[in-house]
Length: 470
Image (cartoon, rainbow, N blue to C red; front, side, top):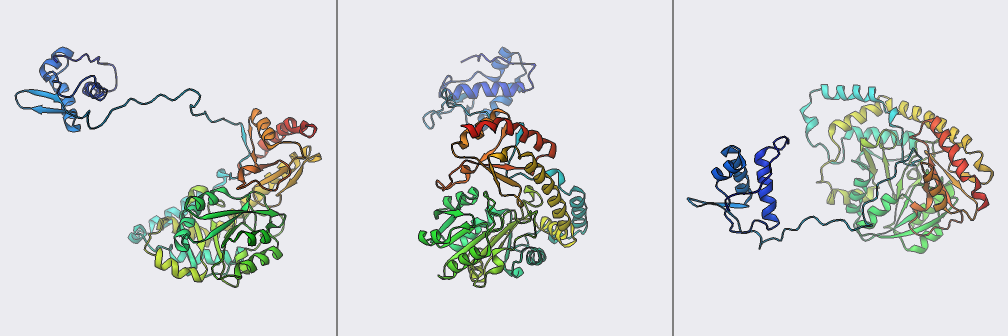
């Protein structure tokens, strides 16, 4: 082989040697240049392509380095024997009809998981970050305590007692990067010999996580008071995963009587536990926040989990797990060697943010903001309330709209989508087919300005108005 029909693009940003290299490599891979074929000498190819000899030499050196060609003294360059080791195949074309769908772009999104990121306290966070980093403490950049810094755990402990009625010591708290990590850590602590019961519908992220880790999971339907304990007892479950202060997605607040029934169920057997996910507990607009279930626990049965991701920002990734004392020994035996997943710098910023009163002021600001949006949403929905039922108000950052019999969730979501509005059906959160007679839609308002809420609900009122006639 004395020449190669390489077409070089001198105007391209890709270097000439790289164009030569890519041409030869691709031809070797697809079999057009075969094993044992001799390549032109660097002098001959440079003359043919009208480039400098050093350009060709760079291309050959790269091919040599990657093993596509071999150099034989006094003979030249030959293609290596690689075709028998691996069958090079071109990228397969996507079959027609199975192309990835382009994600729809919506003008309005009533996400029930949204938060207002524009209200993040940038100035305060910047100030605290500077304070922490100006201390010039080298130890801040070491791994630190695997449970989280003691000072932060002590601060969280005081906050949980004052705000949520949680009774614990700093030694019981584990700080981690998000709820997902802490639930995986909890799986290691507990072992896999447990059957876990979930409310139906539920927070599917937690359900999927435990299911994928190999746990036997079951669904328990709810009534207006939360998870039905009689149904729970029938499942043979050892652990109940609940959100008693503001259930997601239905927004149910579990009353004291049902909480006592749940605690009684857990106390009946030694190895039974309750995982309390204190979701959205900070955002309540009528009366005081509901105390945590853990505060009523006298038998060390409640595993409490909370996060700052909802109240501050998702990217903060700081959550905390409060272990009952009987599980703490298992944590020490199985997990104490694991390093903390939150940097000491971030932990210290969070600690100062809470300790210096900024967190409480931020929560008060966000409650007022969300309360205003909540009220705008409720007022805007009045035309639909002539035939729909509203629930889940006075807490959290989303409402539920239940439609009369005969209207399908698919129809409601589809009509909204055609008008550029994304809404969420309650069935998306079902583990099994729930005992829900009527179509229910979730409408989140945290990440929408008040004027946009009015505009979007006005459109929904129009497109859903005739649903009562279906």
